[in-house]
Image (tube, rainbow, N blue to C red; front, side, top):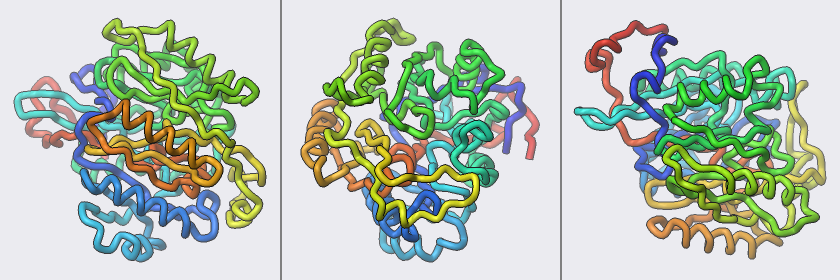
Length: 392
């Protein structure tokens, strides 16, 4: 059910919580698109299953799957506790970007949960979108919210993906200029107007803009691949000390920006450097041969550097679920795990071999969308003057 547009999360007292706050669950969409998941998605299915198992150890996982691959998903997930498999059609598997962004409000009946629906245009629409058929992805947030029983605020036609925002749950949002100011998102809006949209629909008081993301990130450099809150006032930033690496200039520009910023509560931002893999992760000829691209879809090329980053992790209720790249980057994997274990001592660090997810175009944070702990109150429980009609 879509709430009327004249009601917004900020006006109703809702805000996006930090991802490290308690969850009721997680959304994951099963891999099936041939242009994203090579060789019938066999390796991707194994990687997704490992992520699902790691998260399901401490929170429920809602696995979304189209009819054609439903039986395959059932087979992989047989016997895995705390998982609900739902039949819904999507165009691809990036739950972070197509799912609802959940917002919460504390009240007399506890923490209330609602969702936000953004316009999804495959990371750029006709300008530089990655595939031309994204109608089912664009419709997914509303479908899931209806299943879950969450009222949904409609931010359409504002284009946004969940991976392009990070919130600290304490009044601050973090974004990259490279993504949110890209020509394929909201070209008719100024930076100030985009910032106001974020404040309105995320319930934040301040937006921190950093200039760049991860080198060669085809999402126009989503923030979730380069910088993430680990608690209010503290972030991890993807980093390299190698000045010859093209990532260095990007990370240095964002570090310089962060060192000049304060959050909504006036705190200076504490930055923890999280090194990128020491050896660039590039797609091979064998991997490229396994894709089946449609006309108008962005194609992979052999030797292309992939946007590998350890910042692309997921906070489950008891763990930090982190990608591992293996091979020449085994030492980098271990260093990332060590750093995150020190920064998040209250959680386990669980590393998942994630190359098969990376070759699809993203990583663990990209394929997950947390559902914060909260109650979906029915319409009769919404107090005046917020009684409203719904648009089906």
